[in-house]
Image (spheres, rainbow, N blue to C red):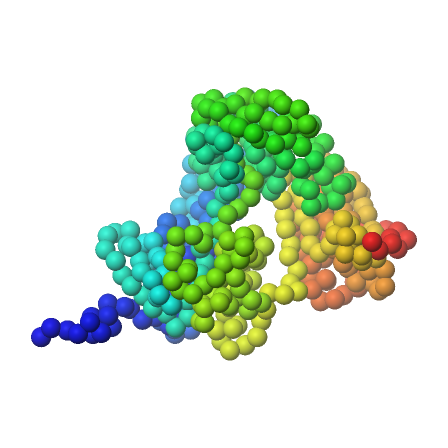
Length: 477
């Protein structure tokens, strides 16, 4: 008996309670949690199981950065009373160490999908209607799904700026840079932000000549001047070249062979030649070509999915999380996006507004920050008192020789709450956590000042910092 069109449609569209597009940090945790709670859940992933963090971004980059740190430490062996090692870096071995870690992480993710009961579907998904996604399977064929709740977790990608000749030069992004099996003779990095700085120091420590081309007048334009000065001097001392106030006009050649950049540098024309280009000028949301308009999902003027404080899109029952939703571009924020959506799906209330956003730049010395820095406090007209401490006053640094940098905290001019904390020094990211906890709880800085931390540890430096004399209140505005 021939089936009616409606019967065929019902047979072909597979129903799920929760349908997730993309297996990034927020998406995968939503899928695992919802499936484990008994909801019929499916997650669609085009390529990277677990998203960018374990495959091509956070963890692989820190793996390579640590290899570079060890290589740099080896060059200083004599200062530790050791015989100097033979110079030279085996880039295929560096790459293999990274690949081995990634392989283990992917296996861990696959196990988690099986254990949770979430169905992992490998293929490219696109909306064909409200809460309905068609998947072109990597193995061939097509499946169509409809979800009571749909979560968009498609992430972002490295931006390739619209510069004549840049795309044609086939520049490296962080993905290709992490797969290098040869050491670039001269790596030119476009962008002096987080990605650019981390790769600049790592590749320089491996032995490459490195030049950073930054359009702004200085690196990290959102950070305080004292932070930028200290990092800039560190980079210059390691032989990294920095061209600030430089605008790329044209690129000639091919990355991996020979490239020439034509620049407007501080108002004059110049050229710079190298062997490789790394594009690190920002991120572009992965929101194009997935049929969002057919799903009734609107975008912002910058191409991110439009969401409210509950991460709900303009389409009923559809959420967006992580980079594609315009959340701060950190894995730990995507994880918090998961917690917001989890609570909403469970009938409880949680929002993205008012959350503290910590950040950590994994260069040497590390830069960690949470809350306001001085520049932001002045811009917002918030009066504050300042506590500062050089890292060499943290006695643990005297045992390791890692004395570069400083700590500083902004204390409210009206009470003793902590408005912001910046650490530039060894293990800065680890030192930030107790301060963030105090800020989240609304505790006065005196709680940290009067705490007993083990000696000698890096965290003990927080006692010294908050015991130092506070500056007079700095005028708002």
